[in-house]
Length: 143
Picture 1 (cartoon, rainbow, N blue to C red):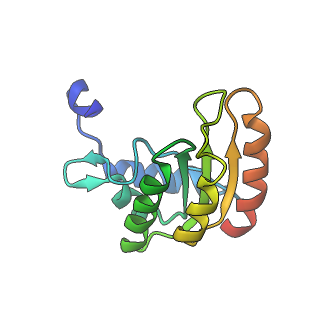
Picture 2 (picture 1 turned 90 degrees about the horizontal axis):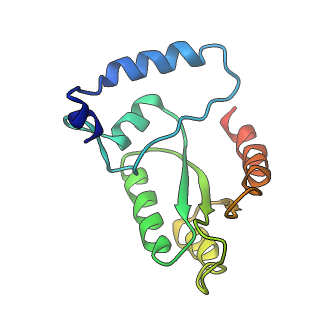
């Protein structure tokens, strides 16, 4: 939609070529998606299609609050249906205070989704500490 508003079309082949060029000598790469796995990127192309073309394992970043179990499990199911590897899940809190459901959400996602929970991002400035822990956990898997 953003491309349409700007009067342009996303060139997926250009993204794939740039990824290959920019990561040629990289030991480790993180590519950030936008909007979710089933969001259109270009006509006939979903974010899942782009992820599959890049061949990277998926790190699902899910909100920590109410509704995340369903949304995250649906994302995991969609990725697996498309044969996209899943590195794990992190949850991210958008507010300072946690809702009553938040402590049990990661366990439910891990159990029903059969995925590792790699971290729980707090709201605010401590997020960089969690990010470092997550990178420590996923880097060995990516090599």
